Length: 276
Image (cartoon, rainbow, N blue to C red):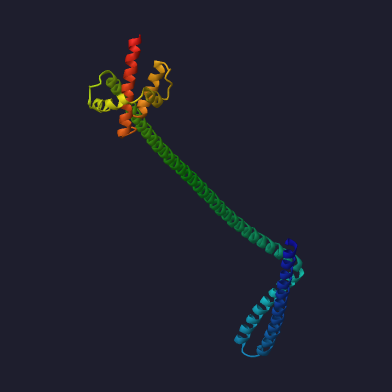
């Protein structure tokens, strides 16, 4: 690239040199013509008015001197044309090199500025992407915390509902247990005090029917043998009274059966006490 540019520079310098040489040749020819013309004028007006001859002579001399000076300069330029050409080429090359260096520096400066702008833009994009990723991460964490909170609330509500149901079931079981205990106490009271409450009136109303029944029906209802011990009869009697209790079996038949069982059990109990 530098060699090509140098060759082009030399070619331009040569063209400039030939143009200048042709110009100086033309000037020299013009001066020679002027000199000849001046000499001719001097010769023409030499023999006329003296004052005019002097003016023409002075003018012709000055013009001739200038022409001679130009001719001398042209000859010197022609002789030293190579040195002048080389100096011109060196000067032109230095000027072009300085221009190229300046353009190169400006291009490098613009390139650095462009790279800096691109780098800053890339850094800004990376920062924005990092902030966006951090925001998405925080958003996901918040969503997970919200889901966990909802899950905990749901579990808490389920536990609370389960605890409430469990407590309610325990209360119902306690209530039924207390009711059974009260019924058992009530039955025992009936056994000990046949005329203590309204329920005993029903028992007495079926007393006559009990007298007409055989004792085998009592053992058949309790599902025990006639030779069973008193403890077995007592245990079977308690289970049967629980089954025939008014809370589980409402109706006249259950009332009748439990009344008959109570009377039979009382009779067996009295007989057992007498035997002892």
